[in-house]
Length: 214
Image 1 (cartoon, rainbow, N blue to C red):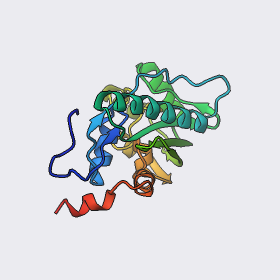
Image 2 (cartoon, one colour):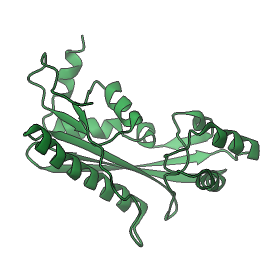
Image 3 (cartoon, rainbow, N blue to C red):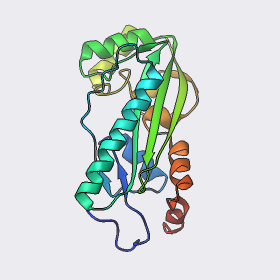
Image 4 (cartoon, rainbow, N blue to C red):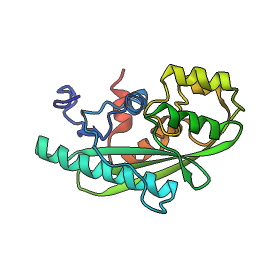
């Protein structure tokens, strides 16, 4: 998604989403926000030695936002509101991978079966003036005990690919979650309450956009 903001809304500041995730884009659109540009950052997302799950989520969200803010200023010649997020799934201090191999996903599902885990999603906002604001949302999720046939069928679906912890709660794996305490949208990838609070708190006209939906 590239190009100028809608000419019918000249009062609307530019909004950049530092992600190529269709899930994060859909969550923004769900609450009436349409980014002017998607600027994903190509980062090494490996945790540092001894890095805790929440620290990893915050660090990666910060780095994604800073890279996108520089790109946005360079390409458009003007700063923008930049939103970035990162989601980390953990069991205790153990960080689960964003699975690309079926073996990784199988190991994650075996580990998550019948137990609780935590999903940490950090959101970073960089304003047109360069100020940084951030929130960290932690959600507890409990999975049912998964039968081997369920795991095999889920792996065959391919839905796990690229997902933290090897699952997407908004898809088929929603059938695995027996309890969720916290932010559902945070588990999907972008906690909408916290994101809108950050934007509105820095002067982005969130609710004026709602009025203009009519």
